[in-house]
Length: 248
Image (cartoon, rainbow, N blue to C red; front, top):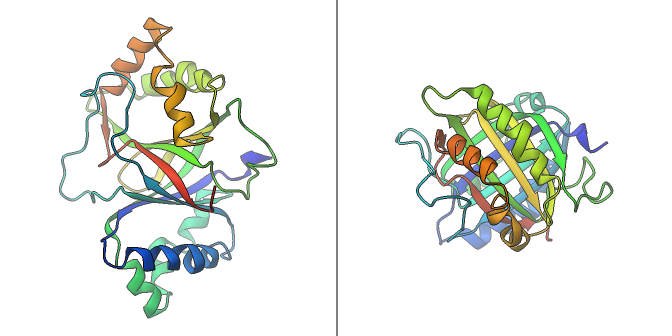
């Protein structure tokens, strides 16, 4: 039953210090609840990205896009889930925004470096912490997430990328303590072609095991390194983020 939410709308952005608290009160108390009244919307969740995040592997292996046309916001992440991705293009985000009141448009205008992806799910797995009632299709994603958004690098064999997820990374997460669920997405709209949403009981639960989980398997650790070095990530990706709304 939890596979009924196959579409997702992800938005990354930054906020100025002035007006931030007012914006968050508006977003959590007004905007998200109103969006969840739209036909087809199943759940919403809002996150704040953490800083000084320890990632797996060598610290310099992550490559990021160098294109000034790609917005660089990444400190806040807003997610909406739906049965399929077409919910988010009927109407589109731009059409949805055009229908808002002037007051709501003013609040959205506070976002800095905003970018989004609409995507469809290609695969999900459940970790040891998955609870079917707690994470039903109309319930928000987990309290802690790691969200990667990226393109395959020039000349990369995308079959290899898909095989790595299917044969190693996703199966390994099924056994990782602290892991609730992992969902792999392919883009319908937006710069990044690939997105991976890891869900954890908390960001601390992620830190406890995920960073070192490949150490016991040097062969697979090397495969991960080979694949990851070929990727071109969006600004700030991958993000480790804690859920602000709904409250954990």
